[in-house]
Image 1 (cartoon, one colour):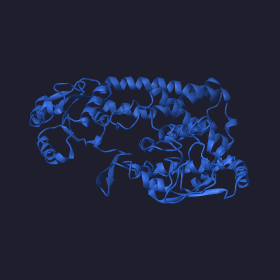
Image 2: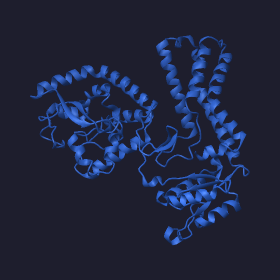
Image 3: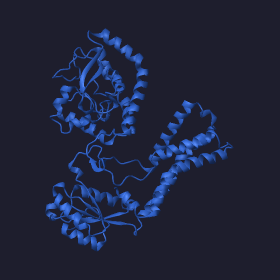
Image 4: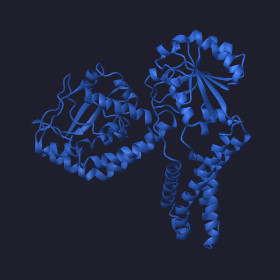
Length: 476
């Protein structure tokens, strides 16, 4: 349970505020639409009622704008400010409405003045209301009568990080970190009296229980390593004599977390430490997006692909398409297609990477590689489900077998389908990897993609790929 959830249990007023935050977007958009209809003498019936209903449903389906999260993993990047999230959220709603209007052909039945003013004014009013609710939340959560005191059993990287975040968000979380208890001496801890924000060493672990009772500590986070499980169990048993809420915080810094989440399996609580981001509905969203975009792009570029196929056939002897074995989802072997750009078609145990001014590259092949046109046939791989538009770039099987032995966590990148482009490529990691550090950088970006994936990140990568193709010096 996050610190935000802990705070909500303290007061009915805060629970009511959460309800208001959830209902505000729908209430604001529908009320403003109704008001503008009255102002511009447009009858609020028929299509306007249908529009209000659709907007209300979309507003409830999309998450409301909130302050940044307090208890999320350190791997999650900072979220947008309230204003930015309101605007992005409203753009998504407007985009869906425009798509519905285009498909149904009913957009002409609305007053342009009403619709334009509504689209412009709604996010402005939402931002104002969101900021007011955020300020109200801050005052409610920072009520001294509601502040919950927190103590930590164990002084280490993970407890320090948690204490620091609690201190930084004290007014929003309603939690106040008082300090740490650890059996090691200050010299062994390497702190020698240095405080972590407002928190500091309060004593040894045996001093924790008396301190909790004496100070009325509300929450205890046990952040001891798993190897000290006996001590953890002892603390849990001793803390049963108090009213403090108890949470065990695993040492997440010891593990490279990929889409970590908690849940249950057959009624048994489980914690996923390394999982694909495309579980459940996320996988459906990813696949539908891939099919829709790949099919659309394929239709648009089919004349270009036909012309390229003719030029490849006429430029040098050999097949038009080059098929190569690569690793796909879950490390399964797949066949990836490209336009042939070289005089050779290597797919054996040893493959020599293409270099700048490589004599094996044909004239038309150099042009295609410069703008990644040779990879257009992979749109068919996407429609097959072997690849995705965005994901870690697939490497030849020979290269995979080489680098999996040299780079820790290399095969984790195969927990998602390989992509035509990826986070590594828009950050300049493409071309020859003559040094192990260059492949390590690619893998680091691929794993970061797994941690951070959202549909918006895919869209960002696709847009930046289009821009980078025009001025990428590593494309050869």
